[in-house]
Image (cartoon, rainbow over the protein chains, first blue to last red):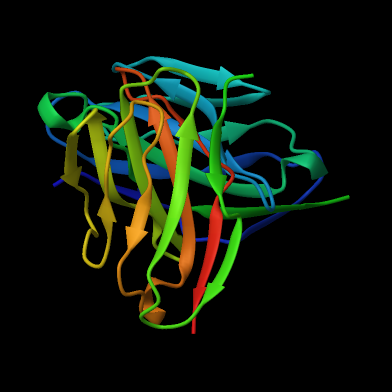
Length: 115
Length: 111
């Protein structure tokens, strides 16, 4: 079955540091890939997405590129802020047949950014 | 405002006492899902629904029931809750293409 693996956390950074959170996946077919963010006490919000190989999703200074050859979708940000402190989830959707709407999630990575 | 709502937000109950967590969306989405979030495990899908009267099991359906009598509502039913169902529950809805909108979560504690 489909699966998503994220780098072990938690991750602690100083403000303005560079962020990378690794994500790799196993899936049949051509999945869509997502990064979701969960701020403390809130539900998940879509951060960015990519629907085909070599697509780059970007939002709020975050970027991730869909790499089919390495089955990866690593999240990056050049300069993090305290307000980026949250839990980040990598996910995939295999939109075929009865998989519509279903997301398979990684385990989540807790990011803490200190001033 | 487009949103997914869940009620209650917090619930403490005892083993065996039936409970229902409601979920409603106002985006006319066909697809709705329930997930549970546990530390170190991410979110795991419990049940999903592709349309009214069409539901199917996700990855961890044991101990849960759902129904989809109306397009906007997708309640999660625990007939006989047990402590291992203590978790954070999220309802989500989506259009075709996999982008899901999540509710604010329901934190359930079963004593």
